[in-house]
Image (cartoon, rainbow, N blue to C red; front, side, top):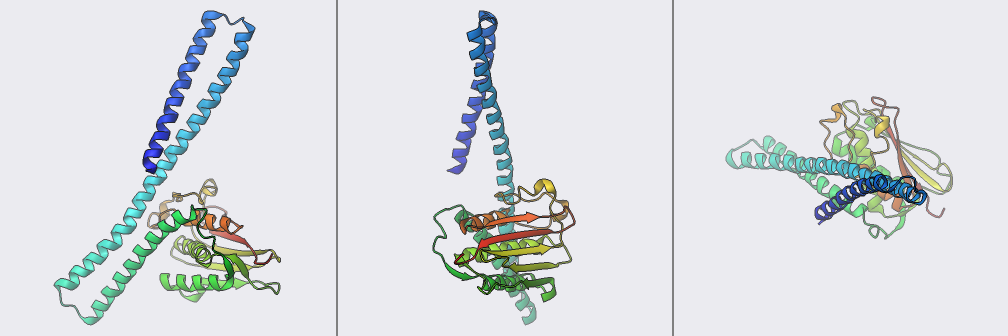
Length: 302
């Protein structure tokens, strides 16, 4: 349905551009034929030309955005396809091996472990796509309650350590004074957990071989809760800084070719932060200098 709608919109704007060009040619010809010295004609001609030029600029801008969106969409489809096919192929291979051969118990247990890991990877990919759709739904996630944000962050860190097999020093936790009111926010606990785990996972994935991630929870005043996730990884070029929170966008970097993903993680984080009355932003000094992602939320009762 969306593809049909996009095609219809593109056809409309293409026809609009062709019509504007034809109108410009007709007006120019008319000026030559009639007489450029006619003041009224010249006045209206200038207005018409200004409208035509503005319309063509809007048309060209839209087409460029559509082309970029189409490329990102294709990249997303390829990424999701890979994220689904690879673990499925692995699970099938291990099952066929178990079916055809008698294996020692230790090797069988290792096969089971790998298959469970692949199943988790499949589940995460599907959930990521579903969460992206849910993040774009303004009506979703409105059932809110008081959430202990400190506990959410610690649970997400424990899950990340388990998933990526990390030692405690690789993923550190720091916290400043809480000003006596606790670290609580009014929101949807599932959405908040999704936002935090996405930011931490990104920091780990883009850290390269040496993982050194610091998760810092701060309450700078009585109104805000600030979560900062700092890594020392590949960093983000300045030109890509404004795009990383867009749907499907992934930073084009040669060293990141092995990092798989759908380009939805930070888009989901931004949508969740906005729904909770907060914001999210990223900072980086450039390639090779790491990245710092900050989620800022209003404190409960503020």
